[in-house]
Length: 374
Ligand SMILES: Cc1cc2nc3c(=O)[nH]c(=O)nc-3n(C[C@H](O)[C@H](O)[C@H](O)COP(=O)(O)OP(=O)(O)OC[C@H]3O[C@@H](n4cnc5c(N)ncnc54)[C@H](O)[C@@H]3O)c2cc1C
Image 1 (cartoon, rainbow, N blue to C red):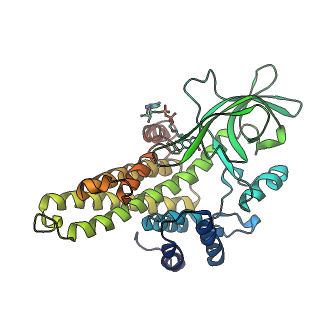
Image 2 (image 1 turned 135 degrees about the vertical axis):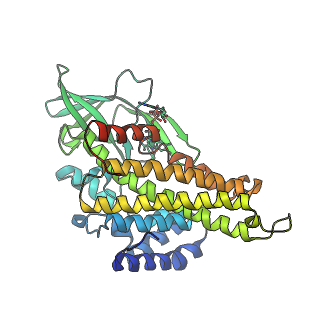
Image 3 (image 1 turned 180 degrees about the horizontal axis):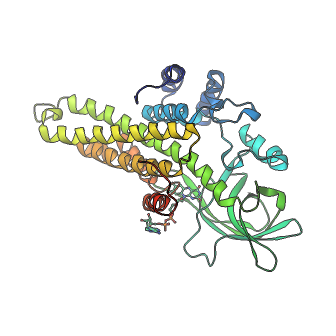
């Protein structure tokens, strides 16, 4: 593991390993409601559940480094039930007060309500989603094209451009919109290669009160991007965890008997490929852990988080792909763990920012804003 982790994180990591072996592994691959609830309850008892929840709500939030260690470890286990270990986090509702806290944040953290995130717009939209603010009411119009979990979410937090009745721009806002609001329609339900479910939604004269704005008017884009930064670290840890699982799995395969008479791992050409997988994983993990420490230092880490997400997700794509290649055609048989990972890993290069868009941000951060380290 990346070196010099503090003692307390090493201890948490050890207890997470025990949690996987004693609680999750015995439940196998059955990702049903009963097994999920068993994992959640055990996780509450063990304390992992509260590590993504704020102190004000009774949580014990972990540092970025600790979360990275744990998320990578759970992804390394490659067991579907690990996704129930952490309790729901606040996401874009972070630090809201008043009505949004009582009616949305608190139920979300208690697992009683679920929100979705509406950011991506369809290419066909005449203009990005907008709202007219008049006498304390927002009238929202527009579309969001890729809202994960949007069919069953209780509400969507959507990025909206707000203007006054005369059309003067007032700024961006993240606005909480109940899914069952009049004027909100689900235009299309679809699932993606990785197996997750999404909707395209439309807002036609959806009216919500002004106090549904998260934070202040004008803070929409920075708020959305702060949330995205946290999720980029999560995606990155998931990516390196995938790499670790593939390395273990392929190591076993390269040492096993092969029909040619000697293990595949005896061949130099195979060793070269395997070494590349290990080197790329080493580099990705080094980057991830360095960035986690930077996030914890409180310094601006927008650039580094974007770089890490691009590098780790692309590395995971390459490592899984080469894992499939070295394993052979059986890796693509339905139900094979590598086939499942192959489908899952592709989405990581899009979620929370497509790779090339983030590359542009990294260059802009340096050339126009003077930000970013190497
Ligand atoms: C599994 C999954 C879950 C998702 N969940 C959500 C969600 O919950 N909420 C949400 O809002 N969105 C969600 N998304 C959407 C995701 O955020 C977008 O797919 C991503 O931001 C890319 O946007 P796009 O698909 O519109 O592609 P585009 O922006 O059209 O980009 C397509 C490609 O064009 C190129 N490109 C585009 N612009 C430029 C440029 N300026 N310069 C150079 N090259 C460029 C790049 O190669 C890019 O990959 C999800 C996507 C996936 C795959």
